[in-house]
Length: 127
Image (cartoon, rainbow, N blue to C red):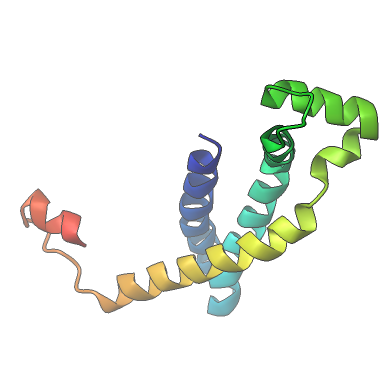
């Protein structure tokens, strides 16, 4: 569920953000790069405590059995900031991936022929 909201936010938000930036007169390169860059960074920061806790409970020697218990234990033993340990590595890994994915999606949308308005639904799914 964590990645579902993340991907939906990044892809939908990037489309909406690009449209807003283009309407505001932003250069095309800024309108294309800024939304996925900002949104994927936000998503990574928002998800990091869950990711950190999930990694912690994967250790067979972990005293925690649930993500919630791990989050509480991490906070109590190492402080609230420890929940975001590894955020910079996560950002460096995921942000470029989503920026490229959005670029490829936008490029393919421009490259591929748009389906006719009266085309059967099965044909529009292929697009």
